[in-house]
Length: 415
Image (cartoon, rainbow, N blue to C red; front, side):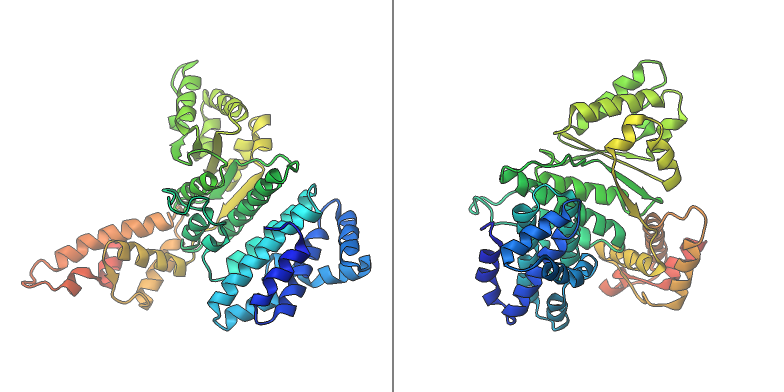
């Protein structure tokens, strides 16, 4: 792909029904990207010279496009609203490539511009009903398909999860930041140091472990880590009962995770044990010694995780990116319940039953509610109730075998 913006735009926009609009939005997106960061004035001046415009004209060009960091450009919205899937797919790919070219060509050393490019690209891919796989370059050896996921396929898997909109947005931005960093490296440009380690904040059952597995596949596809496997543990898996043994136990878990991700759930448990600081010191040293082969994700409740990160001077600086996992809404919980059932060849007879909705709403208000975990438990209990309900039915039909009633779910879950 050419690194010249004009060449790319002139070669691509003729494929769209509104080529002039597409061209204008591409230049607007670039202006919006270059208007951010410490070198904004320098970037915009260079862009103005490139276009043959004045700096004031370029700033005016950037102003409406700044909103595209949270909402997609007008032409893309128009294509989506019209149901023009093929056109919206092509246009999304075009705009994301523009964000990449803008950073490489005009702002190679400006992290603020890179963040703006990441946000615009993430907004485009979040709002466009199209596979992220379309954003991936063709395989170098198409006759030998890879056994691993592409970045786009992993992001598609992320998008299929119910809810988690804030977490999805943050991960898309992290991916775009890493994509641009890889492009800059390939272009021989210097990159600011970008930590790959993450903090996941959220209550139990909000999908933190599931998302961590997807992040592992994303990081593998981006060559951030060579393998991408996930090693799950908690404080008890890192701490031993004797002086000097904790470092050994922690090192064993780290060794298992090399080449992939070490996921430490309820990591603040390390600060509640007399040998926990030994585990933290060992972890910090391993993160420094294995920068290219180890990613650590720590997870837990918000305030407790803040205390954990403050427990060691080396921890907070190594975890600059925090991703929040919100509790599921009652509607999302019902969608999760339906999906759990469908995955096991069951269906909920009346998923919009007000009684079922009221039960979920009431359950979600309980202290210590386990979110999706509670839905899994409710489904398993309902399956037992369903089997018992059919005990006297002589000829059970396939539909009866598959159908869970509101009573199956609510009576067991509340009883």
